[in-house]
Image 1 (cartoon, one colour):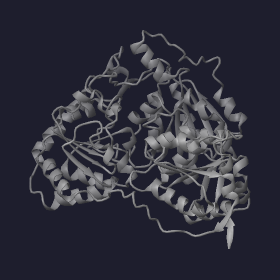
Image 2 (cartoon, one colour; image 1 turned 90 degrees about the vertical axis):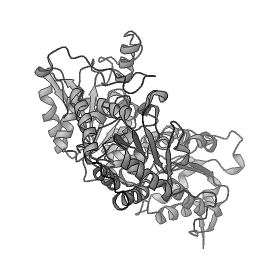
Image 3 (cartoon, helix red, strand yellow; image 1 turned 120 degrees about the horizontal axis):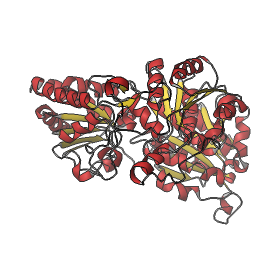
Image 4 (spheres, helix red, strand yellow; image 1 turned 60 degrees about the horizontal axis):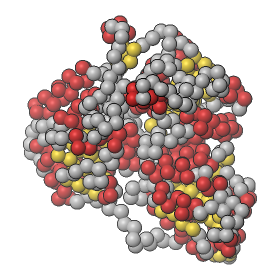
Length: 578
């Protein structure tokens, strides 16, 4: 029996096990929305902006490892998704975006609400499609989900012309046959063996774990490698949670706002084992000064990421989990070297660096330090929460002062650095994990980017908590202006008399709002917010002068770091993370 393209679309999503779609209706997709009206298997989450829809699907995907799904209309509906798509693309997140399109005879004629979203999104999608025949629809949908999830994950867009969704065809669920797309999953055994020998002979090795460890579900294998070889682990922003942050071998995050001891270890190492990361410029600093004494082993499923930014001695293309499984086996069964005392000397040196320059800030009773808020969130949750962030100082303080012990518990925009990401991402994560505590740590600038999603959270009774580190500035911009532009705060001051009252905004949407203005109020506000089974905004008025330290200036080597000079005596008020 023949059914419409809209009906085929619904059947395809059922076959893929889709439970939630995030989206916004419009003229050319009304036939699909009409079918969703009575559908009991798939729920559409109506966001208040298409960008919010993509970020919510992204948060859903990051927290579950499943594909996030988006449905929007043509023209502005489609173009509003681009920032969310680019965010997912940079961080390798599996999202499938369905955009409506004008009927095929009208494409290219500047029809009402027409936009070439296939052309627009081509640079920021893993692949995209314009469906021209309803008979191809089921095959395209199945291919899209396969491409989004396999190999290095990423977003795929499918453009659906109105006449295609109205046309009829028989529904079939085809086998996947994409001859030109064959990701490499198994690493080259000879190269893995060479890597094992290099690891065994090294005296000052460091592991750099990236988001690929989490995407491949390889955290268990990473921990096994680190503990067996006694090699310390530093994690990129996207890799936080891939290795327990509280583990004695954890060095925290490297790079521009990384820990002193992680950066020193990298610069003094004789071997870097880079796993599922791409040597982003925020990690490496000045390339020609990066890890000058180290040989580099690079494991990644994407061959284009290897040797893209830094020289590599042993490249291994393959799925992180599978490669580490083989590498661990070789190290345990075939390698006879004993490294005991040599590795202990290296770990003692790192401990000395850690003791010299721990992550720290100057505590105050009267003024709330933003780092103190993050520390309190970690203390009260004991790390058992899903944390999303916006972008800027709030993001870096979260990365520094919250210890992520499990994968898929930090959802943040790493590659693109998208302000407004965290709140809708928290909505997606909360839908996926209704019984988990989900907290968005935000800045007062970035929360305004998608604050309309308060309506989405309240409508669906989602108990998302938002901790706003409110300093009345675009904090990271202000920090750079202070350090490098002679304190000329050009358009970075958000003015406390103009910025909205976040407590009243929350209440206007039907959520709950709290405010804290001094340190003694932080813990009570957090405890009360965590108890309430509603969406809660917490407005923490923090020290506007506080900066993110350490900091590597642009163009400097990663061991050329700036530090805060504490004016009062360290033993008096210096808070340090052990």
